[in-house]
Image (cartoon, rainbow, N blue to C red; front, side, top):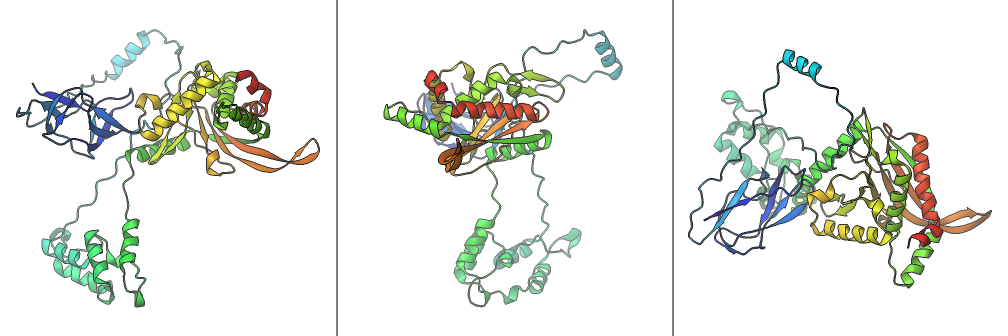
Length: 450
């Protein structure tokens, strides 16, 4: 009996996704554990395995189409077995009708007063918001002959005002537009013309770099690079969420500079003993310890109430090829330095290999964004909605510094705490980030933890 291949729900917050690439074709044989296709969620690209053996009888959902989770995308069965011509439709639950105003008011009056929640609400992940839909493009009304003339000339017909019925663009409109726009004076090489035609480039928008303004192949190639490219689903969601953050969260910023000279020396000594820690490992641990001291920074707000998150679910920003991921280290306050280092390394590898599950990227209570390896002196990060702040860590620089009245070369690292002013006040922000600074400068602390 044929088995349905379902578009999986890979996390609690996942509602839809798109198939990026099918790795098997209709008619191919498959075994349990084979990768059928790759999917793009709002956070990452993930591989989907099959639980069935047999042959891929049917593919319903092609690459690049976004569908809800639990959609039937194909069927696997015995060779020669028939699959349904159309996939079964997903049953959408019908929402109950809204109560009438009078009944709703009476029900509210009779209901007992609710107590505040003991547990904090789950913070919305950075990449969980819906992407605003692009408006439908304006339909071009043009005759087939006029369209052919415009295509042959490599011009965009949209700016042309039509003189036909209902504003229809006809051939004479295209030719009049070509004459008024100076088309007849353009000079273009045959190779550039072919390339423009293949890539639908409007040559009226191209500036020629050849003799007397002649349009060359390189000019068309530059125009191709200027064409709008649809952002990946991840990039669109990042944009949507960060705009939401800046519009709804009153950010303010506090910067300190930590002297990590002694910490760098201590790390070098550990490395010589084949005990490997990165500076980022120390930063993350210092943040965890400081969040335990300042619970208000490990809190969330809906604008009316503030709830302490309890565990330090620490997010760490990881740069990947097509965006930014924030895997979460759960209950980081319960981990030893070795355990924290191991989880940090494992999550970073999974991020770059595209192996993270959606549930590994939601629910962080505070985030660290470390750009120290990128040669930056200072930056201010944007807060992930649902958190009270984010720490931006810059590069350690060797600079002259005054130490006990003497000028010495020290390794100085700037850190900027972006805080939600609805929860965190200036004095608290200063105390929190200085607590992190003091820990990074206290080598005896690290000797006691390692």
